[in-house]
Length: 310
Image 1: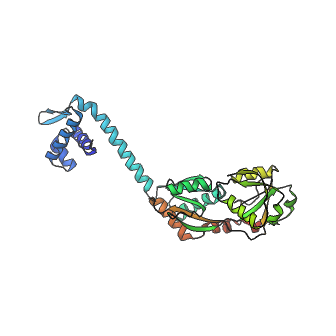
Image 2: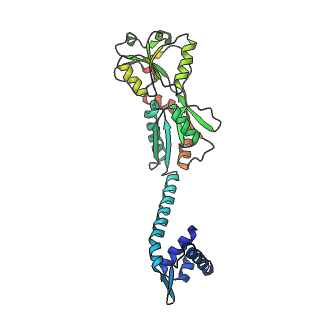
Image 3: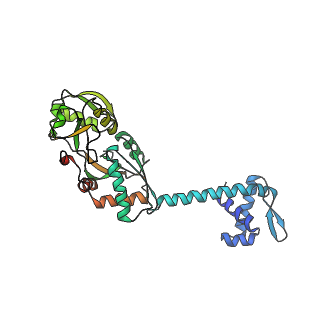
């Protein structure tokens, strides 16, 4: 059924006069009459009846009108919602990132709003792992992500800084009195590892292999917070991205890594083959202009491996 027919029908029902309806709709009376005949033929009923020089709804038109009104009102609401979603000053940005960068991500959102005066922009932020982020950004189900670099040709990104890795041990561990550690000292330790679906587990596995060690993995999880809890409970030690706080997670001690290991480089990324709403585009461009926003965060809040023991 032609949507234009419904708009014409609603207007004629409101004005009860074809001449007035043609003026309001900016169409010829012949086109309007033809559209109503087509609608009536489609429905198999007469929607209007003559009332002197005017017209009025037939009983069938009175039954049909509330549903037409509801349909067109719903469509108007949908259009308004879509415009609101796309408005760069009030729209919604769908962003995902590692749980380990959630505190930074929140800070970046606030910084963006305050520096651009876009306080009405809404963020939908998901704290999820590497595999889930990869699926969402490649499929275009999210606008942007903060993660290590994806190699797919359709994914573009801008570098925002390195996330240092540190060793985390129970606070009563014999290494807890140290500030630095050689990863080879973890050879005989129970090790809490990240889930193999992520990016960090294979990276650490290669690093350990290059050092000629193979820590005894007793548990794997996708969550930094679960690792903190397992380490605090004495289940083992681990290597994690530096927690974005001024203190070690409860019951643990953080140690700098002495070895020269690959950097965990973070990027703000998007799918360049998918539509990026204006609000997300403005945010992306702001991050690009601001350059290494993750590095800036570390300096501004004065955290990082160099502050261990400070």
